[in-house]
Image 1 (cartoon, helix red, strand yellow):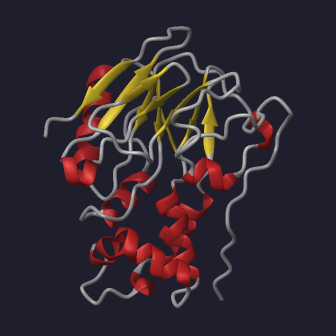
Image 2: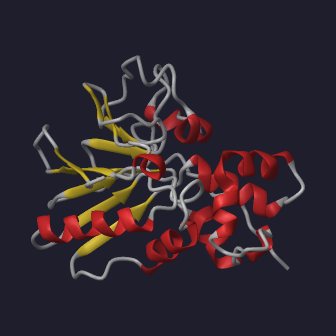
Image 3: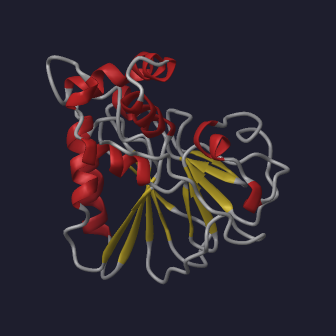
Length: 242
């Protein structure tokens, strides 16, 4: 009997929604992939070429839907890093949340919404019959278990953003997965630079309070990422060739 539960993030303290993990080496943040396994592999090649020794890779969510290879992207993330000293932290995006909800209730409005938002492309990566039950339970469990964010002590990595005026420990899961305004246009007051995806732009969207790395990979044929170093404010940006 299937018994999936939606992942929730506990409030660990009144200073942080997630326990900060102090990082010594570089951190690479990858924007929304949306079924583009080819672009994911280009990003991983760049990480391998750019890094020396240990490194941390944070994936900002939206691995599935719209692009042609959702299944391959999930399987690659589940397999994890192949290089010694490399750690991966995939976090949950709104499209992962939609897929899980659709799988749990295939006749629900959640399933309808998922299909309207690119879920049909994800289904085709599993089967020509387009049956949501062709998505293996282990894939759904993996997506359901993803955390809502990652905190390196200087930056907070979430899929969509945070709600201004709300302390870090009280941020709502729905906002972390879905928010656009007022986050995009209004500084927040949490003590972190927020690194996010979710809202596509032609190039990385750089503001004093946030850095957006969604460049619409599935339609633009390119993926954006950034490398952050401890104690250094300026990141190094990367764009795959179109």
